[in-house]
Structures are given as C-alpha cells and as structure tokens.
Image (cartoon, rainbow, N blue to C red; front, side, top):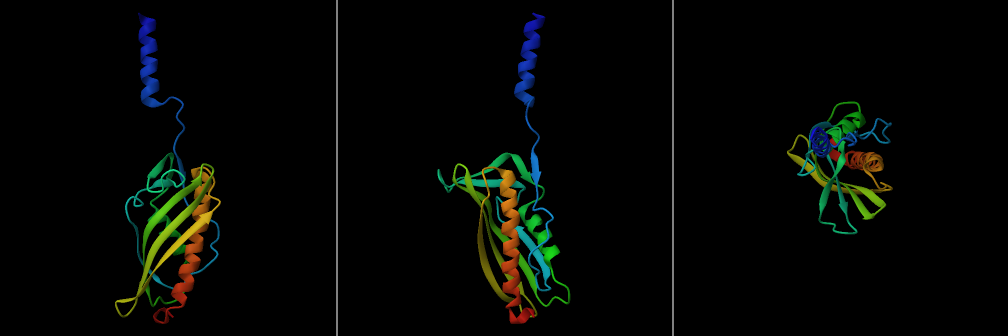
Length: 181
C-alpha cells in the first residue's frame, strides 16, 4: 500500500511540476555597437500592437499556415519588443538639440519559418515625425533578416541585426526631413 502511494505521489509530482523541465530562456537584442546614429530627435513613444505588446517570442510556420501565430514555450524577451527597440534607439540617438519628435509603433516582430529549419526575423513598424508644426511626415518600414535559424536563440540574433538595420533606415529618413535638420 505504501509503495503504491509513493508511486502515485511521484506520478502526480512529475505531471504537475515537470521534474525535468528546463527553465525558460530570456533574450534581448544584445549590447553590440550600433552601426548607425540617428540625428538628434526626441524619442516620444515606442509601442507595439497586440500581440507584440508582451514579452512572448512569436513565430509563424509559413510553410504550414502563415496566418497562425504561436509563441515559443521556453523562450521570452527580457522586455516587450517596444521596450527593447526603445533602448536601442536611445543608444543610437545623436547629440545636439532635437528639432523633431520621433514616435514608433511596431506592427510585426515575428520569426517566420519558411521551412522547418529556415527562418527570418521580420520587423514592421510605422514611424512618425513631428516638429513645430503638428506632423511632419510618417513612413512604414518592413525588414526581413535571413539566417534566423531553427530556434529562438538564433532568432534573437537575427532580431538584433534587423533592428539595427531599421535604425539605420530611420536615421537616413530622419536626416532627409528638412524640418528635422
């Protein structure tokens, strides 16, 4: 009887706690030097639309169903994608008096698998600039960074490269706006 109770208790503990479950892994965009510097801007708000407003790492299996979003079970971002991008933008912000205000909304932050072992990091955002007059201009940016690998860890590296490319494109765009010079 005691032995049966011990076996039952062990089975319950294994089912409830996942005795061999690995702890979740947490990723950010790293601390590598940025390739581009933004012209001096005042960074207003960086936000994400749902579901990218949570620290879940999202992916799509485009080879199976490109409309279906899922999140990695054992991997998370250290903060929301908006917060991670905001930190990178702050590091890239140039010196001097800011003549424009930059606002960003993230519309896509997904690792897209085109095959079982092949993926890319996709980042889509909408940026708007304002200055002395209400809105100067707005623009959408869409980047796909290949080589995101087959798991969340290599995807995080691809997202770091994709956001650096996005910052470089933002820098060129802001610099081209007469009201921001």
